[in-house]
Each structure stands twice: as structure tokens, then as C-alpha cells.
Amino acid sequence: MDIDAFVAAHTPVWDRLDDLVRRHRSLNGPEIDELVELYQRTATHLSVVRSGPVDPVLAGRLSSLVARARSAVTGAHTPAWREVVRFFAVSFPVVAYRAWRWWLGAAFASLAVAYVLAVWVARNPDVQAALGTPQEIRQIVEHDFADYYSEHPAASFAGQVWINNAWVAMQLVGSAIFLGLPIPWILWQNAANLGLMSGIMHANGKAGVFWGLILPHGLLELTAIFLAAAVGMRLGWTVIDPGPRRRGEALAEQGRAVMSVALGLIAVLFVSGLIEAGVTPSGLPTWARVSIGVLAEALFLTYVVVFGRRAARRGETGDIRHAPDLAPTA
Image (cartoon, rainbow, N blue to C red; front, top):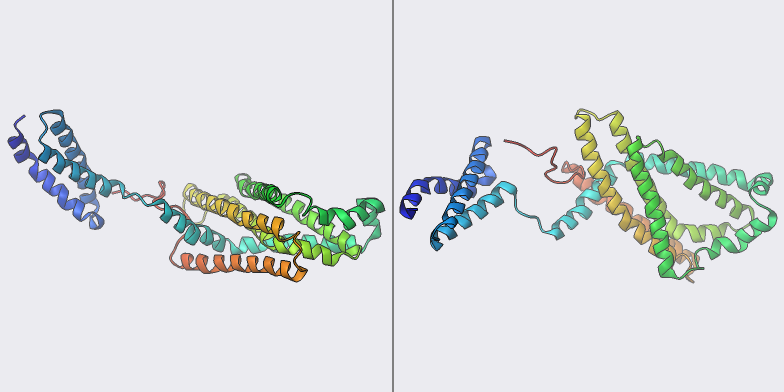
């Protein structure tokens, strides 16, 4: 191969590609098409150069040009740490913030059910008798309820609680596949357990013990469960009412956003599990334990409101960048 003739024939192509690469952020549609075409042609030229007697200067020039063109065509790799920062600063909080109506509705409905059941049990001895014998209820009130939080080593208990709560949250999120229809039943079970135990403890003069053990971890834990229910129901509703977008696009966007919440809740429930294992059964005064729970709850809600509202105002949805079904084409 005549290297000089080869260079003379293809230098205009390489120069044009170099110019497009330098201006790749401001190219219009036809220029983007041209960039892709010239990148492919230059990559072929590089292969031809390497297949014969190697000219190191020419091979180096074309290798650099092809590498820069590939970066312009495919986009530069984003460092992993930036993706992590974006997840916690944008993706997770903005999805939680945008679902606030569903979130508040799930919380209100669940707590209302728990309150009604607690009052019903506390004021009706017949209902208490139906739940267990006097000896069984006394065992729960005097020992079992409090012992549950301290009968296992803190580390293993924290892991057990974390896995259990994460499983409940994943059930709520996964129920979106069925239009969110199973979610009210899961919330009912959770609210019923809370209400029945509250009623039994109040009826037997152990209200202080109940709230002193529930509030430190329960505030953050229940908030996370309500959030999982909210995004699950919101995704289910998107199937019914996708809005102005095509149903497939709306579902894809909401589905990816829901996965952001699922991953974020793993971290939130991990913190809740640590509090339940390390703070709830500790020897700290009740006011101190409850204060820790209130502080954790306040920090989480503040985080969602501040970061979520900021991201929502910028038009963020929690979807991944350059989503394949929404990627622009020239």
C-alpha cells in the first residue's frame, strides 16, 4: 500500500471528522449523522493501516482520532461516584417527593386503621378475650413485647429486622405489577398488627412501654413502608392513566423511578434496623430513645423535601439519564 497516496486520499475525511469531534456538543442532526459515518470510515482506515506495514505516526494519529470520535459518538463514561451522588441527591429524593400525595394517603389510611383497631381492642374486654387467654395476654404485656427487642444479639437482630422490613418493602413495590391491588391488603396486615398490639398494651396499663419501644425505630420504619406502598400504587395507577405520554413510555419511566426508591429504601431501612437493635432496647431514658427516633424521622423527611423539591423544580423525574426508550435520534 502506498502510504503517501492513502494519506492524500483520506486526509479530508480525517480533518472533517476532527472538526466535528471538536464541535460535537453543538452539532445539528445532519452533522451528527455525518460524525457517525466518518467515525466508521476512519475506524476502517485505521484497520487498513494496521494490517500492512505499520507507520507508527499515522497509526498513532488515527488511533487518537478514532478514540476521540468514539467518545463523542457514545458519550464519555461517568465516574461511578458521580452516579452514587446523583442517586442520593436527585433520583431517590425526587421520586419520593413527587409521590407525596400517595405517600400521605398510605400513611393516613394505615394509621387510621391502626387507631380504630387499638381503641376497639382497648375498650372491649370481649375482644381481648378473643385474642388470647388472660395468661397469654399477661405474658405478652409483661414479657414478650419488651423481650422481643433484646432477646437476640444486637448485630444479628439488626440484620434480621433489616431483611424482614426490606422484604415487606419489596413486596409493596413489586405489587405494582398487579396494578398495586395487593398493596392495601399488605398495609392492612401491618396496621392490624400495630393496632391490636397497641390496644392490648393500653388496656393493661402499658402504654408508656409500648410507645417507648415503638417510636424510636417505628417512625422511620413505617415512613419507609408507606413510601414503598406509595410508589407501588403510583406505578400501578400509571397503567390505568399514563397521562399525555404513550403507556409504554410512562410505565418505563415510572418503573425505573420505582427501582430508585426500592434501592434507597434499603439504606433507609438499614438505619431503622440499627435503631431498633441498638437504641430501642438500650438503657437510655425513654425520652432519649424517642428523641433519637424523632430526629431520624425529621432528618429523612427534611432530606426528601429539600433535595426532592430542588430536583423537581429542575424537571427531574428520577429516571436514568439517556433512557433507551427516550434517547434522541438524529
